[in-house]
Image 1 (cartoon, helix red, strand yellow):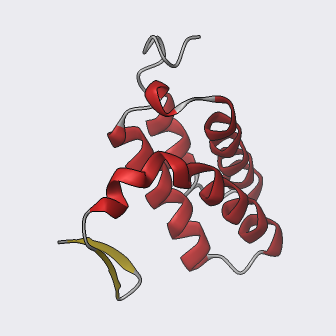
Image 2 (spheres, rainbow, N blue to C red):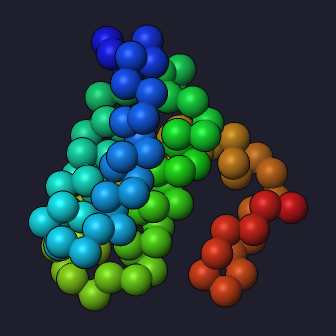
Image 3 (tube, rainbow, N blue to C red):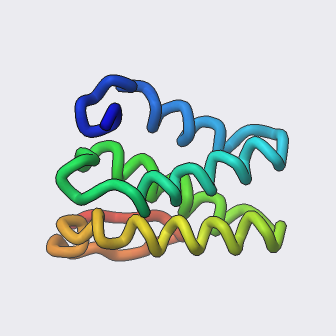
Length: 103
């Protein structure tokens, strides 16, 4: 109930930033937690900015990491966030140089 009521406004910022932490376990915990959030929330509970930040952080781990467990959990979290990103794909979206480009 706290996330839909915006009682933790910095929650997504914390998890997005800790996905880039030097400690592998912190990265992994952040990615898994983002996946749990996506799994438990409905589309109306998470705003577009939070979705975009989360997907981009997860995508960066997919692009950068060679750790099999981080890659596996990143794929799982990414798949859980895809329904939230439907509006992103209604625009023309291209991947150029491993980056999202919205046109």
